[in-house]
Image 1 (cartoon, rainbow, N blue to C red):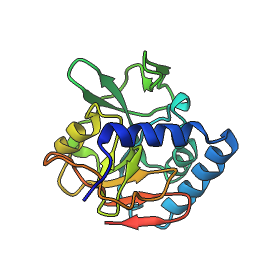
Image 2 (image 1 turned 90 degrees about the vertical axis):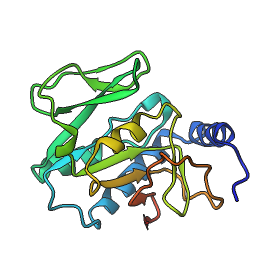
Image 3 (image 1 turned 120 degrees about the vertical axis):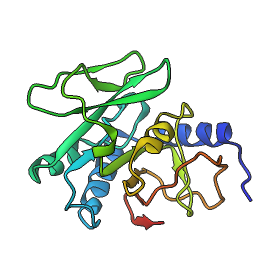
Image 4 (image 1 turned 180 degrees about the vertical axis):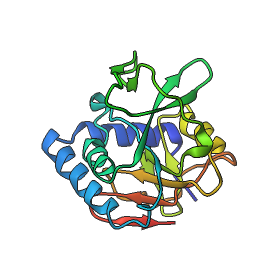
Length: 190
């Protein structure tokens, strides 16, 4: 059984994040990135990654971008549509221009659109997760909709600054579970 509601959990984790120093976030992000190297995911070609919202004190994915670039992977970034809560995916190239939208989300301005079916690995932002692989995001459902469009085999990897929530997170039938979640301390496999 879970004890806290989704809004209560969001409030709790946003507060915990707000108390983290820049140094802790950077050190934790580097640990998380180093742990990704242990995952069985490096034979794929198309990797979807989020660019961190620094104002929300998210995991810094810049380190992960460097690894993906170094391994010569196709890196995809999303642009959010707040009318229908969908994501459009663009190939990151040398000419990609990134701008923050009204919600401070760094996004590609335009570029080469890649169909969702091509995506093989997705790195997912989250506020909290539990030991069953359930995740809690910001509540708009962007990633739930996006993951439903992906191939069934897509590898879903959450990145979290905190360890798993002991109690089961509240979830809906349409929520899609993670395959892995990486924290600064360990890799959770579901």
